[in-house]
Length: 185
Image (cartoon, rainbow, N blue to C red; front, side, top):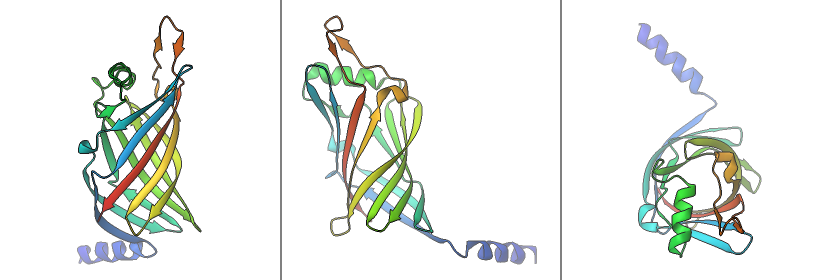
């Protein structure tokens, strides 16, 4: 009898919420690129698409124009980036503290839809430090493609940009992370 009461309460609490469990795969067609600048040049570090494939079991709760997500956590290997120049790649991995922190964790917490605009609320963890961001995204339902750009300052993660040639070459603390993810459901 006690179990029936608990089940009834759970059913009543679930009204007004739409809960859905979905398996999502991020395919290796996806691209992640980090762009930065120094006082001399700009650089671009591309993530190796062989490391991209992730299978996620995502729990979605829809409520008032928001989709709350649980399990939409993407682990990116800190050593998976190539900056097209061996020394820049080495410096980039050093900035990320790749030896000590082998993954960058991106946790998609919620999706907010307002008319034609879509915003993702992300929690990003780099080198043991976490920060939350709101990122405008574009979703193409025909190709199951999500695109966006996250702008961040590496100092927010207590990281230091390298200085080369006795401080004559200085890397800017602001970087852009462009993502173009292809999903399978």
